[in-house]
Image 1 (cartoon, rainbow, N blue to C red):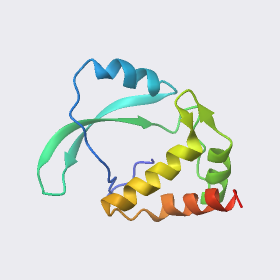
Image 2 (cartoon, rainbow, N blue to C red):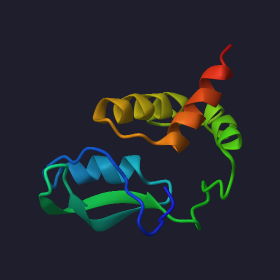
Image 3 (tube, rainbow, N blue to C red):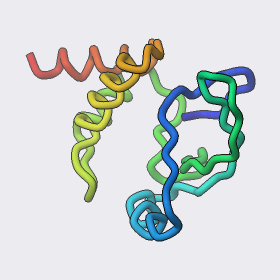
Image 4 (spheres, one colour):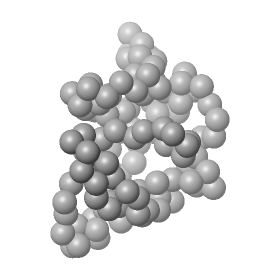
Length: 117
């Protein structure tokens, strides 16, 4: 994700207990920062939330790249939590289930799936 004024990041929010942060902080240790942000739910309710973000100074940041280059990078990347390819494919599926249209994610998904043919 790259911060952009006026843009929306759709997803799920979970209420967790403080002990869960030990696991999340370890999982997101590759330069991700825990960041406080306001959340707006589909029903209009508001809450204060925490998200993990990677800034442009993150060593794993690919920079301004087109979807094909991003897909190629994802296809060959894997971490302790699993395959980046699987993560992106699950993300695209979850976005569809939420009714969130994210053409950027869906285009990367198309390139990943085409790479398997």
